[in-house]
Length: 93
Image 1 (cartoon, rainbow, N blue to C red):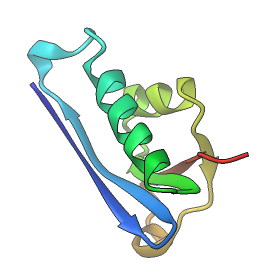
Image 2: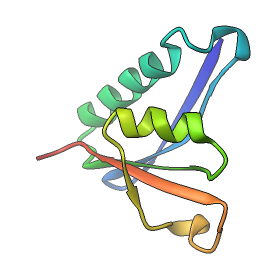
Image 3: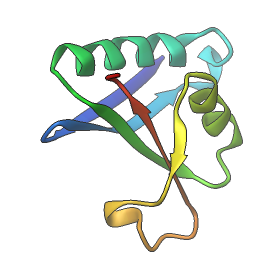
Image 4: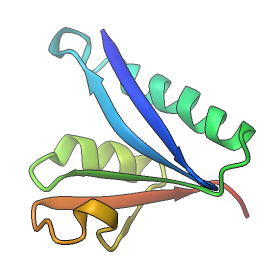
């Protein structure tokens, strides 16, 4: 029904994928997946989770904003991508 991938880069983690099938959307699965990933990152001592999504992904951006993710400048391989929206969630103080 859903899947997610979290990749560690030193003290930071990047949410590389989060997908919920059409049939399961609106049931809280994306939030449940994020709960597990965020807890894992905290337990691993991560300072932040960063992510990139597309500028047409309004539902994804709203989900992340509602969970406390903030917009940041495009980073890494997304730095020159005008269609990228980058966000992060600080996990420590």
